Every structure is written in structure tokens, then in C-alpha cells.
Image 1 (cartoon, helix red, strand yellow):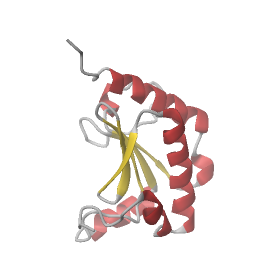
Image 2 (tube, one colour; image 1 turned 180 degrees about the horizontal axis):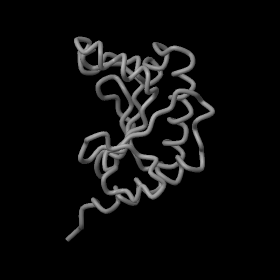
Image 3 (cartoon, rainbow, N blue to C red; image 1 turned 90 degrees about the vertical axis):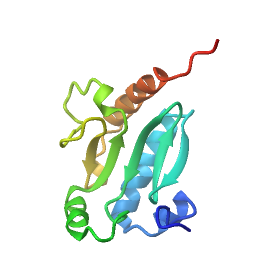
Length: 142
């Protein structure tokens, strides 16, 4: 177990989350796995990231921090909720303004404090768009 990846599996990570966070992460994970069947799930910094041609998205519960020295940042993240981040968010249309850049150039996120804040239809649409963006990075065969 390394500092960058304190858990051996997503299931192990889920066991360490408070119940409310765990339910949100499980629902988002189910949507990601449903909508991105080609994506590989990999733990990085102790949270699940999903990639195919490039990194597509990640789910980051606020309880898990990769820098324990930054307690203020952790407290701010706890106030926001579970993060669903899109690694190529800057390339997505974001017509409804659901994705927040928060001063970042590439990664755009949305946050969930409660399970009932998750609109499956909206999340599916974003994940399908993220997959289209990811396919644009597919290497051309000669």
C-alpha cells in the first residue's frame, strides 16, 4: 500500500467511507460503469479514476485526501460533497452549466451532498459526451 494509493480496491475504499458518502459514490460508480463500458477503473490517490484512450472521469469522496497536511482544503471539500470530475471537461459543451471549472483549465467538476441530488439522466448525458470526447483521442492506425 503506497501513500498515493492507500487502498487495494474500490471495495476497500468504499468500506472506509461514511454511509452517506458511500451511497453517493456507489450510485455514481454504477452510472459510470453503465455508461462507459470500455473504460478501465483504476484507483489513483485512493479514489476511482476511469480511462480508455485518456483519463475520462473520477469520483472523489471528500473523506479521502491525498494530502493530509491540507486540513482546510479537506474541510472545504467536505462542505462541497462527493466530486464527479471530468478530466476533459473543458472540451465538453456544458450547455446547462452543470460542470464547474473553479479556476481550472481542463478538469471540470460537479458535487453531490445527497443521493437525491443525482439526476441519472443528466449524469448519463455527461458521461456519454465524455466518452465521445475520449474517442476523439483514439490513436489512428496506419
